[in-house]
Image (cartoon, rainbow, N blue to C red):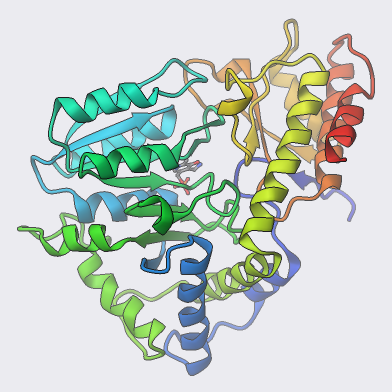
Length: 387
Ligand code: PMP
């Protein structure tokens, strides 16, 4: 289509035509039998995607920040101690959010592009009695991935609830909620889940629900209160109507289509595809002589890449040149290094062709910026990584 560009930012992403068709279908009543079936199925599919057979799914209209808020508002009571495993911008946000509910927040931080070591997190867990710990699976401001499996084990050892902000990970990065012992995992519709922005998606495990039931005060957020939403989720899943706030009917229908496509590909196959595409993208960036924000391969997410600009580039013009090549990429987000790097999202229904189109547009933009490099090297490295 003339003028249409490929959207390769870390959310929102490119959506499948069938998902967009569901967005455009006539809106039904939120208590119509066909919508009750769709909502119920979407809840069941959430459990499958999160690999959380014993989890309680919540689908609520709002963005990823509301998903963070649902966990924060329902698990924190004033005076509770919370530990934030902080790898960037969204760790800072989680700390701020938890303190609004009266939590006493401690951050374990790492230099930009790195993550706190397990021994640093363990030392923090030993030093105080925390109720919960939050972990950003992939911090979208740095592209650093955390070792959620090992952190969940630590949380279990110290009897601390673990909340995983999987907004930039779920349906891309490997995450096994029940097997790894994660108490809450959350995301938003517009990322790897592949549905337009507007839904907060949360799965709470049994320990999180027990902690919620054991509260001595009601959640200090009316809209986010699980006491309001739990009966609604249970009703739709048992295929009966319920009402607290009008659900985002078309978004829920679109989500159900997207979840169906994700499960049809297979969750494990999807993890592997994300690993393969990200390897290729990073290989291409490296072959062009560009550095990356995560300081090592092991720390780099599979859902996004955060390349550093080479020296001497006209940064404000660069993404415009990429756009002229037909691809939309994102600028930096971390306030301390904002002008030093850009971000490529490769999550959801991304193909090898999308990675090649992106690297091609980056190569053309580097040429237009006067950067000297071996033309085609990025594309060749990506193609080699595919095979
Ligand atoms: N956490 C992470 C890791 C994110 O990447 C984002 C969004 N980029 C959010 C939370 C917040 O999500 P939203 O913008 O949908 O509120």
